[in-house]
Length: 447
Image (cartoon, rainbow, N blue to C red; front, top):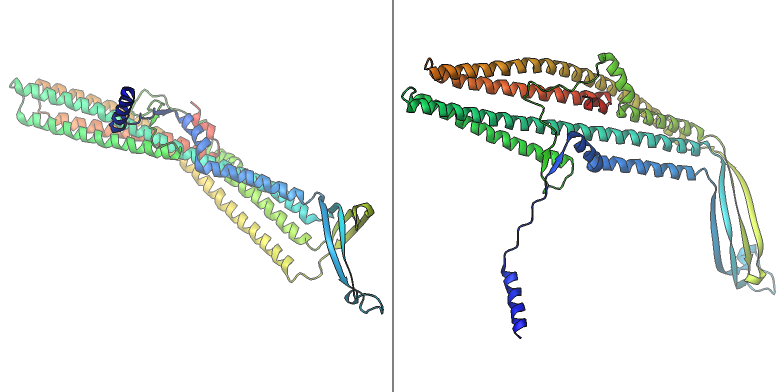
């Protein structure tokens, strides 16, 4: 009894204890390449494109089955009762009006095979081009997902660089505030100098809060693109490649812009998809015209048939048929016109897409070159702004000037840091856009 009381008391105590909080999931630290690989594995749009390829492969198997003989087994048992008068048109005197009921059992195979039907061949080849179109669409979906992930990752790196720069500026503002406060205590500085430095410190802290929030929201967006569990925190494993004048720029292999455009015409999956769709439309046009040709087929059956199993004997029928259209009510002509319109639409889409691809290649190339020059200017601007801050601090320390010059130099350094971060971001984003525009994703990862 004592043991039962102890067990009951322990159970009640455990029930009254508050539920322990769940352990937070370990953060998921990803490089850019790992983020891209994860997107290709579990991005919803990529998965749907993969399923479309599988579906088109099954369509090809269905089209191929139309070219192969179809054989079916048959087992049947029927009960028959016939009216002789309706069967032969008159009655025999002295004969019954009906026959049966009697049972007939049969079992065997039936077959049907198309010997000559060009429309079936066209459908089969169209299904093959359908696979090519689906695979090109799959590649396009992968490229779009990769570009989105790369852009979001680079945006997160930019936000992380902003946080680093703001943290550095907060430390600098704190040091300048301490300097002004110490000068005021020693009787060299004034209260207004300390107040200015404190205001600048609070402004820098405010910017740090904003940049930290921007980094968090950017990482949330990356998690959504990767279709990661929202409870798992994403962390950037790649070193932040911004706000550092010693960073070695990743280079895209040099190539004349016109050559890049021609390369894009041959590699972009959207153009390959349209080419496959044009082939399918051409086959549909041919198939519509070949509807007027005769179609030769074989069919028949072989059965064991009898009133009883012991009396069953083989019966069979083999038939060759030649079918040809005489009047279709305009159906064939309408199908040809429909296929011709589809071809014209695809040609127009192809021309529009080629123009868009050329524009994307030229635009991203120009943006990349411009951003590269911006980086050189921004790096020099940061160096000069740092020198300005150092000189202003020295002048303030020596009592030659108040800290208005220091505050102004701080603002100039903040502006220079922002320009540098933006230039690095635009350069990397332009490289990613150019790799997508030319259909050469590997160029983005060339160091």
